[in-house]
Length: 230
Image (cartoon, rainbow, N blue to C red; front, side):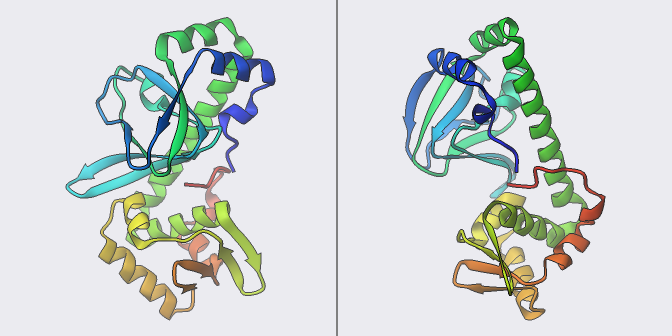
């Protein structure tokens, strides 16, 4: 699993970033920025959860990342242009720090070690997002849903004698928002898998009984990406 950026930093670099940032409270459901807003700030999550997504049509969204404590968001804009290319919304009540783009660039220019950590993290983040989009686009609707289940199991899965139990609840609507397909399509795919005994569920908690089916569907043996999470 990809280690959050702030946890990679030593105490001096962490304290320097925080000292140059401001803390704000964000309630659940509030937008931090939307696509095409000026990319003036980079954000660090002290506590909470932020969903980074892109609208791809009327009522359709595709989720690039779900970022949590000690992680960063806003890099798709701050390091790549003048505006944000995605939208950031708090999916939980959150406390986040923000730092101005120019101030951040000055810090990175003055501190080679900090700059190296940022470069490595951005590269891993890009690799992870590319792999995710590949899964969502190249393998059809069933492959996209399978990718979400694999990624969630890597984050919250517990190995049992019957399979991999996902300890966090999964909503069909949330899967739909992750991959940009309709809720009805996701429901139909999940129903088929339950009939084939690939998965089973107790309300919102799922057990993956045949992970090999998902991995074969996505040709996982040919994938070198290590950060296979949402």
